[in-house]
Figure (cartoon, rainbow, N blue to C red):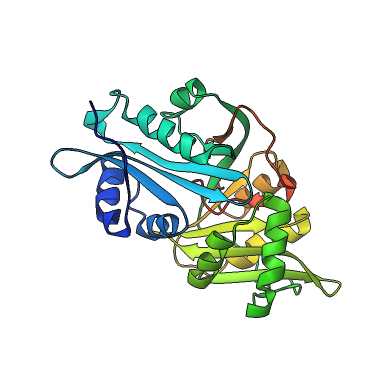
Length: 278
């Protein structure tokens, strides 16, 4: 019988990175640190002290939760560890609406547990190319006094309070921008460094014009490749991103436990912060 799951700590991050490398994932230390700071991680240990499997659960008040970073060591796959961890965090998440972004490997397990695909995102990655012009005049750097407005915009789009995620992410962001029209902020976006690439997201905007202005301003001028995870239904935005040097990768399904409706005005969620948090 496998040992009971135990809570991950920040000093477990090196072991998490080792497990990620074992499964062909990038050793994304900034992302693990951020996720373990705002959520909770659970692991099953080998007798030798290494990690056999891990998963992260992040709760967003009042009643939304996301599961991410599900990993099982290659030599321990198909032994029920993934299911054990998933059942553990689903009990902890109840009665919240729970969603996740499913890898191809994990999807069969999620379907058995009652998750239903409702949408998808596609990773776009490459070196951003932009015309030699200044960013849109409505875009400016985010100021400290903008934070309450930004958090309100995010709650409207996401349908839950992501303050515990967004405030630390703003603090480490290489670039944090808002878009202001008619004297009011109605869009924002972040860019943050993550293992040799610049991750764009979250990006929240009410329309394509605002989304393009923010993406262009966030993506330009970096010496590393840019990644942005866009909702797949945004065909025009995806085509525009390709014209600017980004390659679209196969979509990753968004799955919700029981197929429930997710809260918020999700058309405003142009790009996710990370697949582990939405």
